[in-house]
Length: 388
Image (cartoon, rainbow, N blue to C red; front, side, top):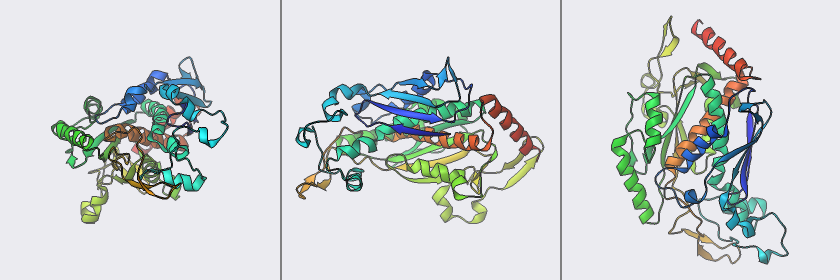
C-alpha cells in the first residue's frame, strides 16, 4: 500500500492517490471528513481554519460505499483559491513582473531558502506553497483510509497532546482507550489531563499576544497489535524505524521516541527492558511497556506508544531577521497566515501518519487482496502466535 499527494497551499485543491487498499472495505467520504474536521480544530489555530472547510470527494476506487481494489483518489478543494487565482493560476503570463505577491525574503525555520537554492526559484512562493503544513490535510485523508482498515482487524489508534510549551500533561494509566478517544476529542487542546488544559490554553494565548509561537509533544497510542509485525532482517523493514521516519516527516517535527525513549539513557538495563511471561489464555506478554511496544524493529503485542516533538511554528507576527535574496540586504522575514500553536492539530496528523505506517506493515505481511482475506489471515496469525 502506498500513497502520493499533490497540491499547493493556496492552489485549487489537494489530491491524494492511495494504492493497494483491499477490495470490499466499506468506505465513505464521511469516514475521511471526520478526520479532516478534527485536524482543523484545536485552541491556537489561525484564520485559515475559518476560511477553508476541508471536505473530501472520492473520485475513484470506491463504488457504492465499498473499495474496488483499484487506486483511490481523494480531492480536497481549496475554497480560498478564488482569492488566489491571479497569484497561483497555472496559465502562463507575459513576464515575471506580472507575478503577484512574489517573495524574495526567505523565512527562518521554513523550506524557503533551501528549496529556492535547490530548485533555482527566485520567487520563494514556489517553495513555500508546497512545503506548507497544508499538505498534511492530504496525508490525514490517506491515514483515515488506513484507520478504516485497522478497525476491521481490531487495531485502534489515537493521538493526543502530552505537552505544550512548559506545561506537561500527567499520564493517565487508568484511562481506557475509548476514554482517550473521547477526552482527546472533547479537549480544546486535545490533552487527556483535564487539570492541565487551562494552563496549556493560557500558554497559547500568551504566545499569540506576544506575536510569538510555541511547540510541544504529541503522543500516539496503538492498541490491538499482535507480536511480530515488522521485521529485524533489514533496516527498512523495521516498523519502529518506518514510524520514526514518517513522524519526522511531519512539518515542524524535530524528534521522536518510543516508550520511555531518551529517558533510557538515565536508567540501568534492569529498569529499561520489559520482562516476558506466558499464560495459556493470552500467550506471551510483557510485564511492562517501557520500550513502547517494540523489540528488534517488531511489535511485542503491547500497545505502541510513540511521541513526537513539534518545534514552535517559525512564521511569527514579530518576524525574525532574514536576507533579501535580490538585494542581499537584511530584512524582516515576510509573514504568511499562521497559528500561534498547532500542536493540538498536529496530534491528529501524527495519529494518521502512524496509522498509515502500521496498516502498511500489516498489508505487507499478509495477503490482502480483499478485506475478508486480510481478516482471515490476521485471525490465523493471532491464533498461531498465541499457541506458539
